[in-house]
Image (cartoon, rainbow over all chains, first blue to last red; front, top):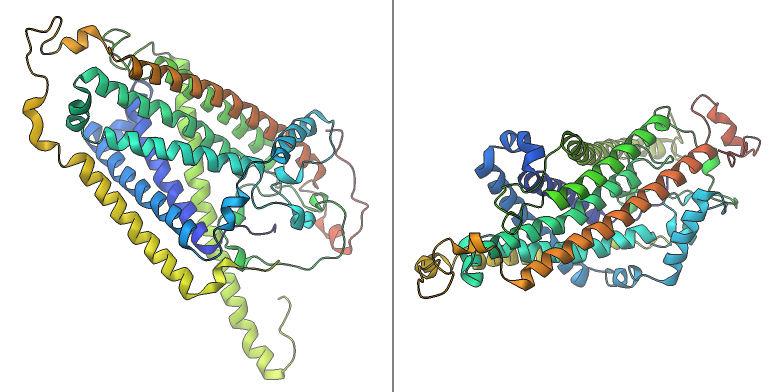
Length: 334
Length: 130
């Protein structure tokens, strides 16, 4: 197992935030991409049901985000995190080296890019360059989404500010288009942390707190030691299938956001705005499937965490009386 | 190395509790502010205003959005989506490729894993070529 990074509260926060954001995506984009995701709206209780769910999840998002920012400010030992997320020139180098690595011109990924740190874990910073990017995008996007979301919470209130229905619609559109960056980013995030060969199908360091991670002392070893690990049999096709689904999902959501932005006013009175095509419908639905995969993997991570915690508790329970009885060492394994 | 934020007991718990309260209070207050106080002002909205040229009820739908700032905002966010989307696609492909290369370095599922326990390097079958 790789070194842990998340504290206990972070693991819970991450899972709750994920559930909340996925719910916001499913409710928000089934409205915005209504041409393609009409079934989702029906599934979640029609227009009124979907928008009610979206508002509830939006409320949850504000609670979670403000909670997190406050905790980072007042929590013990948290302030240093602000320094750890600063982008440096090294991160740019890590990206360049990643490209070189894929092209076969570099032998290893840069420490700032490594997800699997293995034996060299001490050399790896708290966040990879992608991790830092995720924090930045989340910060900017969440603030803008929450502000614009609150502005359109009550259409009456918004219309009072801007006086025209078109302006109110423009804000709704702005809100939807803003989220497109997030939805594309999350699809990538699911891929990045679900399909790394050393971690597939889920990266446990997001679910098991670092206080519970086993820290084994190991002798000097060159490199990460990844060549000592075995691949899972399903990884070879899963990595390509998921990669293709993520690419199709991102491209479709992007294209859909241009044609189907839900901004009907200037483009003429075509509700839903723009052409509908079968390909786009399939593509956007694949994108939603990728998000669903994220929900499943996140849940699976938490199931594994529960099992692991149970196992650790069981081991402690088993070994204590034995160690006490003969005064010797506890059993190493079964 | 083994410094743990988790281990500070009470102050961690207190910080979590305080943060949770702040989160809930801010969320309730902001939703109340944005949905509450506007209810009483229906009559100021969409007034028939025949003296204004092109004005009146529903005129905004015919004319389209005439606020250039909001139009510009939509154009900007479209552009941001496209730029971010393309960059994210690059990242997906870079990781896809990197994962395949890393995967090629790992042992195949059918290879016996026991070799690793003696610390031997004989399984260093490369994988660079894939």
